[in-house]
Amino acid sequence: QVQLVESGGGLVQFGGSLRLSCAASTTISTFNTMGWFRQGPGKERELVATITTDGDITYADSVKGRFTISRDNAKNTVYLQMNSLKPEDTSVYYCSARALVRTLRYDYWGQGTQVTVSS
Image: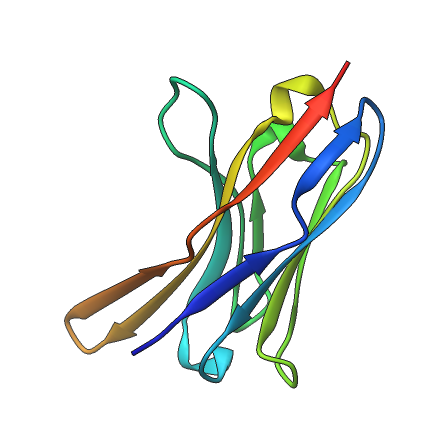
């Protein structure tokens, strides 16, 4: 069973930085895409950033220029470097992984890590 474990969340002041990590229980090259989503209070879960096995990266407009997603295949870990944090970035951040096998799609989620940005 695939497990994704996030870490690195916490409380940070406006303008500060955090780096989130997502450690997978299996080799991440198994997954076509890995990414980060977030869900703020009373809001729907939204995409933050994704990265494919080919290294193609997508960011939400709200985080472009501030957040950087990366992957370390040797460590089976995906990172999200978050700089210039704003109070509106306060959310639970979830790691995700998607594997495509023929016509089937498998999605996996971590348990989430809380990020709180104080003003």
